[in-house]
Image (cartoon, rainbow, N blue to C red; front, side, top):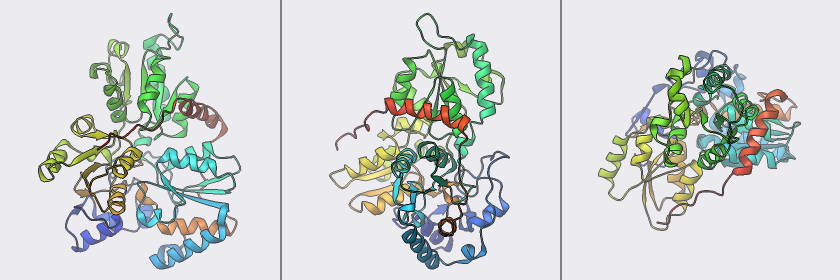
Amino acid sequence: MTTTASVDLTIRDISAGAATGSTCSTELLDAPWDVDARDPGYGPGASMADAAPAAAPRQGEIPQEYREASAEELDRRIRAAKAELGDRAVVLGHFYQRDEVVQYADYVGDSFQLATAAKAHTEAEAIIFCGVHFMAETADLLSAPEQAVILPNLAAGCSMADMADIDQVEECWEQLMEVYGGEEPDADGLLPVIPVTYMNSSAAIKGFVGRHGGIVCTSSNASAVLEWAFARGRRVLFFPDQHLGRNTAKAMGIPLEQMPMWNPRQALGGNDAQTLHDAKVVLWHGFCSVHKRFTTAQIEKARAEHPGVRVIVHPECPMPVVDAADESGSTDYIRRAIEGASEPTTFAIGTEINLVQRLAAQHPQHTIFCLDPVVCPCSTMYRIHPGYLAWVLESLLEGEILNRITVGPDVAEPACTALERMLAVRPAARPVPER
Ligand code: SF4
């Protein structure tokens, strides 16, 4: 499918029989407030089969006027509210957010770029984060205390971030300390294990990492962060995304036998003590259900149907997919690779469909399509809808701050330490090979 319409319109057209293709759920057509009312899970989309934690935030019903407003009315009201609020509010939109919301964003980017944008806007009283829960937490960590970070729909969590629960992580650490004989450095001054968390994790996990000498990474700087960690420790405990951890460590030459997986439901994570001693990277049993959908068969099909196709996938994809692709890199890398292609090129991209279709619309000189032929957006990004944005913006105008995301000082202090360590090692963006 090579359409460049928005994903929402594509889903509507497929469902109406006006376009070819398929979606992963007919419930993608349902209004998000209907999903909020009935579904304690992640909702339709890539994470619909994942089990949401019982304590995951729920979104209460928003007023009828927003549920019943037409797209045209919401558009008029959002633009009017933004104009009246001016510099008092900044709207941030993640790359994976639907076009129908991204059109109102003052900044569009990945989670770290958006948190940095939030930090730069000291004049804004409110930061409206059209992304998911952990991203709003990170924006709260980096912004000034008096600034309110707002998540338009509280049910917009992240199934991958939820896979590393703080109680399970604390339990894992206790067991590892028993195996490694405590947290003290060895004769070479190296700690037994350094915890590293991907940006896509809760503030509680970032705080845990900060308290135990660890660090945060992004998909752009994961190898530089692992090098930082190996300069200070014998091993790394990497969470929550096993695929980013495995792909990054493998590219650094670490053998797969030295990357055991930690399953939090089993004693010693399902390993024996010797395996944990021999480990270089202990991988947490987490994954992104969006990127897990990509397969080597899809790459073979793309190559058979489009000779010369350039296949670029995100490092949250499983290792065989990353190995079979021509390149792998963060959303920012993918964007720069497409922008930097001087000749018309066919790209098959392994990342979230909203970003892929937006890139296709922005670069009509290229043929750009998603490796996965089934339209299946990120479930939790999909929970944000213009109706929620209109609701939080108009409430701000009336002096009411809704859906504020705050991180308590006990967590915020060590979480900021872990983020600052990352900022100190953050390399320049990885160059895209010239084509
Ligand atoms: S794409 Fe994956 S990691 Fe990103 S918000 Fe969605 S579920 Fe979470």
